[in-house]
Image (cartoon, rainbow, N blue to C red):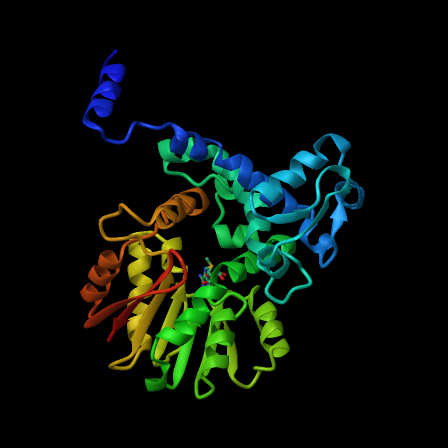
Length: 354
Ligand SMILES: C[S@@+](CC[C@H](N)C(=O)[O-])C[C@H]1O[C@@H](n2cnc3c(N)ncnc32)[C@H](O)[C@@H]1O
């Protein structure tokens, strides 16, 4: 009754009627998500490549049962991930500009690593969000082994590769924008800490030929980073250093970057890393955290807030944070000046100057 009275009031005042659309759209969002993730899992966008195929031609190549072929492919059309010329059995499906560029494995701009990992790991783990919220405990591979997450993932070569590829797809656009928007001309050296496959160093190094760069990560990651750097022809420009950022000092540089690193850890460990970065910088040097910084009022950056829940699922006590949090932690340690540089979509660079 109360609900009905409220609705009438809204109508009487001429304000917008309550509408269940947004609720239902979000409640069913995992359907749309799973369709896209499954298409990536089946490598549909690569199989399609430059071709335009009928549902039966594509369905045969992907080994799809006839029952789901049209529903699956037409959901991708309606979702904006495929285009179709014609209708019915004659209709021919082809990639959109976006899927042909970013989800075709033969394209140099492929970013399917992140959807692949979302599908293989996170989709299932997020089914246990409720348990994570009740217990504060991670819900991934370490739920039962209790091992540190990177030790667990990196013990398995396939998972190591999948994780590193996923990181690459996630940050490429941000690193390109950082290379444009941050004034690297004042500095000579950059150390990227937790640098994974050395993507930041490769992108920033290509854009700023005067810089000498170091990418620092755990020992199992180093050979893969070295391979990517060699392939990019940047062996002389980027040094790969293997180490543990909690056990070892960070390689000294004028600029220290931490891409999606601080959010992996609890507050105590975040502060340890910020202090180590401070110690590795000269006066006037800059620490840059590239993360999905949550807006200070915690009302707007939905992706940043969801990323923080993802850290609960993956690490338990790791969490994302606001620009104001970053400034507070860094001031405590001695940094003097701060700046936030918006990057792609929900990501920003939080900069602290020593
Ligand atoms: C979430 S990934 C971010 C990768 C990359 N910076 C980016 O922005 O995409 C975190 C990185 O930290 C590295 N890492 C984790 N623990 C580490 C440690 N103790 N010492 C050095 N690197 C570590 C991981 O191997 C991984 O590459």
